Amino acid sequence: MDRKFSAFPSNNHTLAFHDHEIAPQHGTSTMKLSAVPENALEWLARAAGAVPTPILDTLIALLLARSVMVATRLDIFEALAGGPLPPDEVAARCGTDPSATAKLLSALAGADYLTYDAGRYGLAPVARKWLLKDSPHSLRDAILLQLLDARFIEHLDDFVRSGEPVHMHEGLTTDEWALYMRGMRSGATLAASELVRRVPVPSGARAMLDIGGAHGYYSVALCRRHLDLRSTILDLPEACAAAAPLLAAEGMGDRVVYQPGNALTTDLGVETYDLVLIANLAHHFSAGANRALVRRIARALRPGGALVFAEVMRPRTPGDAGQAGALADLYFALTSESGAWSFEEMAAWQREAGLIPRKPMRLLTAPGGGLQIATRPRVRSTRFTTDPMAHPSAHRDRDTHLASSLTPT
Image 1 (tube, rainbow, N blue to C red):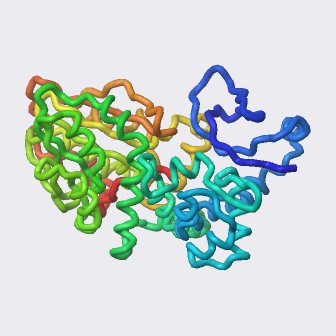
Image 2: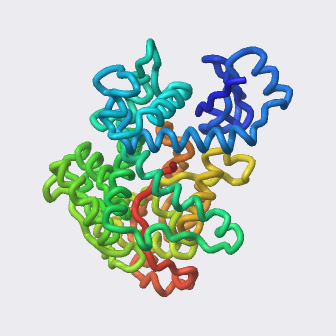
Image 3: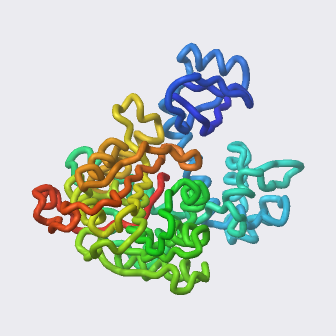
């Protein structure tokens, strides 16, 4: 029986039958990668528990992922951008073996990334929209970054045995830093429009701090929407150097600038910023390090200013996590210091720092992701003027590395 994998809204029990979804009407909806029955017999087999799901979740999913990544790296999709071609012509354009290329093309057609007609392969809509370099929706660099992610994931067995994470930001070469920044910039396009609409930029805001956002896209998008706003991006020197060409291409001049440093040690000042954004960074730090960072941010906010966490969220219980949330939590634990955090945990850090947390918001364009926002009261409080290092929690679980902005792959 043929099986195809598909991502669709799920509450752990969603089925897809041809083009129709059968989904629960209640509960939190996330995205799930799943086998999709293609005819009535296959649907019945799945309902009866006769589908060998572990094989589909491992061998088939692994081959599909690697096929898309390799085809992207070898410019297979770019070769077909101008129209359908036979395998020999694709191989000639890509400098690959004709026979092996034909096998890869066939696999991609079977997975609905390519079309096939009379010996010629063409781009399916999903490939044309997401995988071409010049597409306004291109995720090409994000897919290429997953080749680096695959290297980290190979250490999962060591992590489970020892508990020692990979520390993904240590030891990256100059080329890998550049790939990392391009991949993060590519992935940021998915949720940027929704994020800038929903982030509550205070009236009259002039100064923004973007912590760990070296690719610059969130800062650029927010500054374009709010014409009086200027942003400083605080990130590791390696990240800033690698991402500088991406930011320069946006043409923002001195409205968006870098401050190379370390989020956990760099002085953030007192009442300096109207808005602080931490996007896809908290999962790299321990609870103690995040708590201390939020206290320093609270001091750096002007009265009425806002702190925004944009993160992949960890639900209250594993049963609530869904496939994407649970796997993202595992990935971030493998590659950094902690894993994903819940809305409640982030709100607690904000509350402890004297900020006023708002109700969390889920991002429709970033499955499993959301915003946890808090504001600084407009009335001055002595708790914002004390040394944040005097708080005992600032000395617990101190991290030593700032991680650059990251998405779930």
